[in-house]
Length: 331
Image (tube, rainbow, N blue to C red; front, side):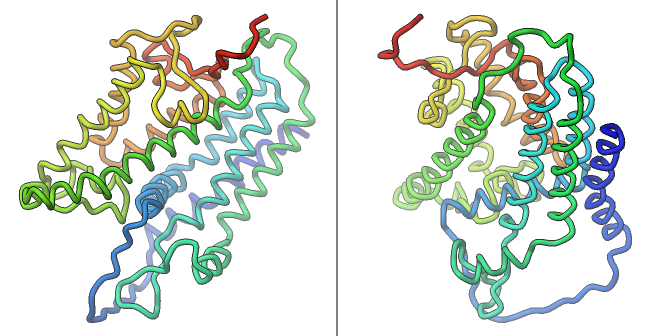
């Protein structure tokens, strides 16, 4: 029975991908409209996050990541992982995808020329609720099937003791990434851009346009690559490398009380290891199409890794742990 439910979950999770590819191969008729007026550019720090999440979730759907996630969850349950814990993790990620996907598109405002509905407005909430469709239904059904299937499976007798990652680390890492992302966006929009304007070198460094996402803006595979896009890549590397080398944590990790250590120890990693970790994002930005997919796989790997480590953790021989308060008594 459990096997049938896992197979059904894979099939249901893959249905949105099948629909997406069917539309791409047979798009049907196009409807073109135009208007005359000024564009309403959104400068909210949440706008770049929305744009980048939209691109990432498009890759998730195109490359059948939900179905792959379910399949890997099934394999993990057959191995050394606790089926119920693995099922909850897989279902949680599926539920997160289903909830976030309708939030990320830039919905057009019919009352303005080329403008979008403001984030968190009443019209925006109504549009998001109306955006729920077959994709969300399929992913939520797949999540339910995963929970049922994992609940009926036996706990593997040969699970390695102590191999379960620290509770809450995965979600803290995700939130820390979001915090660091927003810090970078705020600095670019409200600090770097005004400085470039004041010193009159914004002609050499064209306007920082992040309304469609940070990843879109710094992509080196666009027709017009300018020095500003080139300069942001080493800046992102230094933001991560310097902080991890000096303190073992970025501002986001500090807020979420997690830190990077050398694998199997409590010692901070050496500069060489933190450099390897910090190179991941700038290098993947250089890879068109496959870059976001690799980032997704890298993050999801932690769900099935025996020690809860991502691929770049394995590459750099590091791990992320909960930071213990200095005032907390030690055993």
